[in-house]
Structures are given as structure tokens and as C-alpha cells.
Amino acid sequence: MKNSTTIASQILKIIPRNEFNKLAVKHHVGHKFRKFTRFDQFVTLLSYQMMARNGIRDILSNLKAQSKKLYHIGFQLISRSSFSRINNEQSYQFYEELFYKLSARCQPLSNKHKFKFKNHLYSMDASTIDLCLSVFPWAKFRKNKGAVKLHTVINHDGYIPEFQTITDGKVHEVNEARKVKLPKGSILAMDRGYIDYQWFNELNNMKVFFVTRSKINMKYKVIKRNKVNKKSGVTSDQIIKLTTQKGALYQGVLRRVGFKDKETGKQYYFLTNQTSLCAKTIADIYKDRWQIELFFKWIKQHLKVKKFIGESKNAVFSQIWVAMIAYLMISYFKWSNKIKSSEWEILQLLQVLWLNKLDAVALFKPDMEEITSEIPQLEFEEFMGH
Image (tube, rainbow, N blue to C red; front, side):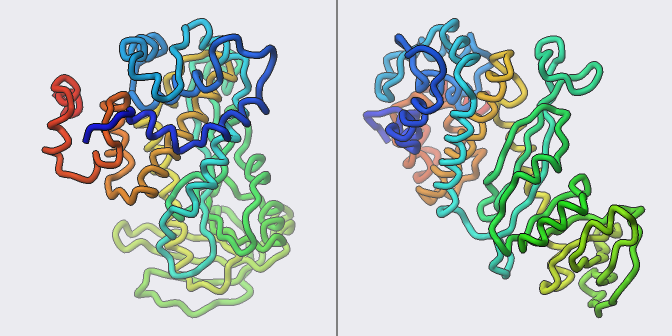
């Protein structure tokens, strides 16, 4: 179990240092750094995520107390004032681009989605992150409320984010959705908040399939009724034509599938331009959209995306992007080493042992008794929740 480098050093190797430095040069703003670097900022922000600390003073004092372990990763302890200056001045777009590069590396390692069809499957949604308006006046959302919005598309191959943007809370979901470019033949699941018939027509013209919930007051006429297997829960399968002025913006074939959940007895109606898959599969695709809700719930519960260590827009966006990078690093570590533990179980151990000199992969291979024998007692008690 002993290792000459810290777990932090091993996890950071997931991102090639030369690639990191090239991006840092590309996105650098202002004068050349005199002492502290973009890497020092990144390690501080990443450690804030991985060590579950309570604030900037907490994370910096903790890193200072363990400063002898930091030379393995080429990190030098950054002062609070220098960290705040870099956090406010150096563009968050650096971390955004780093996120996309890491996401592309994760995709080949991920598990394939559970459906029999070969189409790429995605889910799209947005989640609001509340901010105190008096502390973050730039984030005005409503009269007495501040917020930013996280727009995400997850790939059902591994359920990891493949497209993501952060905007002011006022930005409508469809405005960001139009920026997403998906491969031809892809299937995109989304809730009713994304219904925009002109955009649906654009997706249809790009040969991208969509699956969403039908609006209750939608006006349409039935063109064709398909046979259904009611034992599967499907109550109707129709080809329809929208009859409103807005509905006329959609020119393609539109399918309306009715489905009744046997467990809850609730009736659902779905809209799609996918006509080759069976009606039950359409219902199952929308049901699997729940994974993006679980993704938002996971990051808000386990990562630092609600308590911020900077007050500027750039600092807040940088912290959120690093949190997303931390999520991808955990996923990459799990898949590349064929670890069966969940992402949460991995993060729990990292939070306790981030700066310990242990073999990160071996932590998840032997029995717990072998692992804990080399964890200092104080950290072990924290890990076990005492």
C-alpha cells in the first residue's frame, strides 16, 4: 500500500502537464506570473473539491500544514491574496476548455447505454445554483434572488457530461440548447421546458431525434393510429399534426406515444420524431432521462458548487468548472483502472487520503482491513464517521 507519491499526485497525472501548460498559456491574461501559477490555482481549487474543506482559509491552512507532501505534484503553496487575484483575473474559459478535453478522453472508456439500439443517446437539462444577491450582485435572477444556471447534456454511455455551459440564471434553456451539435442519428431526451417547435424542426432537419413530454394543452389532429401492446403499458401510438400557429413551425413527422405507469397509475404522453423504435422503447428512453436529474443531485450533494470561495463571476464560474473536472477525473480513474466502487465511494476515500502516500488504485482492490491498517488513526476515525 505504501507509495512514494501522494494520491493527489497520482490523480493529477490524469491531466497531462504539458497539455495543461499549453492551455494555461493560451488563456493567460495580463502580465506574466511572478511566482504563483495557474497550476497552483488549479490544485487549490481541486483540493477544495477533493478534501471537502469549509472555505478558503480552511483549505489553505490545511495545505500549509501538509506542505512537505506537495512537492511531488510541482505545487507551491499560494497565499490567500494571490489566490484571490488569480481567481478573479484569470479567465474561467481555461477550465471550460480543460473540461471538454477531459470529457473527450473519458468517452472511450465509458460503458455503453443499456438499450439495444446503436444510436447515441443523450439527455439535456439545466439546474439553477442559488446565490446570495447581496454577496453576488452580478448574478441577479429575480428581485431578491441571485443565481447561475448549469446547462448540461449527458451521454448515456457512462452518464457523464459531454456538453456543458454556465450562464446567468435568467438565460432560457432553449437558447443554450440551440448551441449543442449532436451526431447525426442521435436521440436527445428532454423535459417539457425545452419544447420549441422551430428548434425541433431544426433538429429534425439535422437528422437528430428528440423525445420529450407532450404539453397538456397541445392542439393537434391524428393522422394515423398504430397498434399497441397494452400489456407493456403503452396506451396509444399516433402520428399527429400540430394545428396551432407555433406548431406549424415543425414540418417533420411527429409521433405521440401514450404510456401508463403500472406502479403509480400515472398517464404520460411523449412527443418524438423517432418512428422506427417501438412505443415502449420511447417511454423507456424518457424514463432514463432521470439520470441527468441524479447527476445534478450528485454534484450538489458531494461537490462544492453551492458554497463559493470567491465572489466575482469569474471566481464562481472557475470553481464550478473545476468541480466538473473533479467529477470527470473520478470517472476516468474509476474506468481506466476497472474499479467497481461507485464515484461516491471513491470520493469518500479521496477526501480522507488526498495527501497520503498510498497507491490510489490499490485502495480499491484489497479488503477494507488491509486498507485501514495503513491509514493514520485520526483520519481513519474521520473516514468511518466517528
